[in-house]
Image (tube, rainbow, N blue to C red; front, side, top):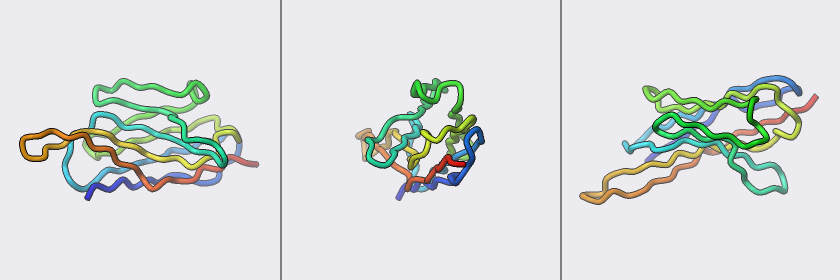
Length: 123
């Protein structure tokens, strides 16, 4: 069983920083991309940042210049460094990892999610 364990969420004041971590463990598979999503109360889930196996990154316009996604391949961990936090960043943050694995001779796509971690930005 593949497990994604998130950590690093919490309460922070506006202008502060947090670093979220997502560690992947369990059955072996090839990771193609790692992403961070967030969902605020009453709103739909949105993609915050993503990083591909080749290291390409993308960000939501609302977080560009403030958030940085990175990964440590040796540790199978993806990070989200969140700086200059704003109250509107308050949400549940979810790690998502997509990739492929072998099922016999067949390659199948896999998609795993973390349990979510709360980020609250408030004075």
